[in-house]
Length: 102
Image (cartoon, rainbow, N blue to C red; front, top):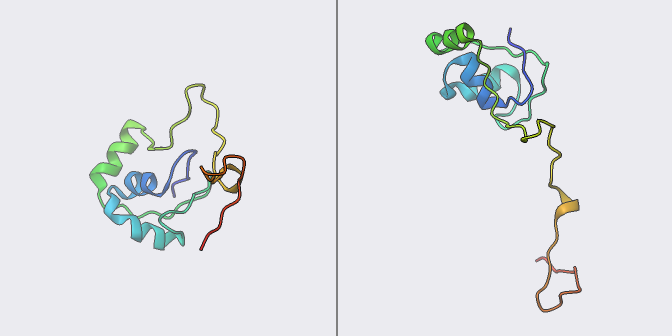
C-alpha cells in the first residue's frame, strides 16, 4: 500500500497510484476522503491501479509526483491567509477599517 509523501495532494496521488486522474473520485471514495482534502504525509493510501503502464513507469523510474513547490530556499512556506490577513478599506475614509456587509 502506498504511503503519502510530503507536498502531495489528491491529484498527485491518483495520477501516481491509479495511473489516471479520471479515477480521482474512486480513490477518494476508497480512502474516505474528499477530493480537495489536504492529505497527511505518512498516512497509508488504498489504491487500485487503473492504468498499469503509467503506474509501472513511475515505479520503474522512481518518480514521485508532488505538485506543491517549495520556495527557492527550500524552507516550508507559511500560509499567508485567513482572517488575520484580510482587510477591507473605504477609500472615502482612509483611516477607517470598518465596513458593512449585507
